[in-house]
Amino acid sequence: MSNAPGHVSWLGFRIDEGIKDLIKCAAHLSQNSLNDFCVTVLADTARRMIAEHKTLTLSDRDREAFFDALMSPPKPSERLTHAFDDHRRRGAGGARMPFRTETVRNGVYVEAVVAAIPKTVRTA
Image 1 (spheres, rainbow, N blue to C red):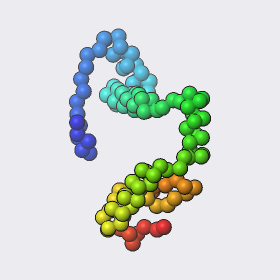
Image 2 (image 1 turned 90 degrees about the horizontal axis):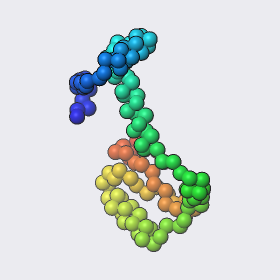
Image 3 (image 1 turned 60 degrees about the vertical axis):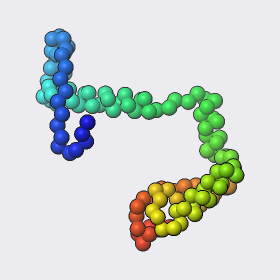
Image 4 (image 1 turned 135 degrees about the horizontal axis):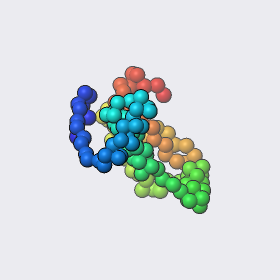
């Protein structure tokens, strides 16, 4: 599968003549060519299906536990604290790390994404 701009791929399949007539009618009503209509509908359906697959639905109990953890997060364990300290030490040597520990708020380490932006451009 290629994601290169302008790359065109072909998709072919067989369908019942009645279904083809139904699709042709819908394409005509939407004022699209048969090809444009099919590509649009297939892409929209694929995006929706992928989004539904990636969506997590929580029970009331799980949702409450999740938001309680967000609002009152537990203190980091000693092991996690050491991991962040080690991460901070390794990132301080001038190497550009994709993530850098920025601050500690309410006893919880907060990370901010630091892209490969020169330090002279960053504002803090």
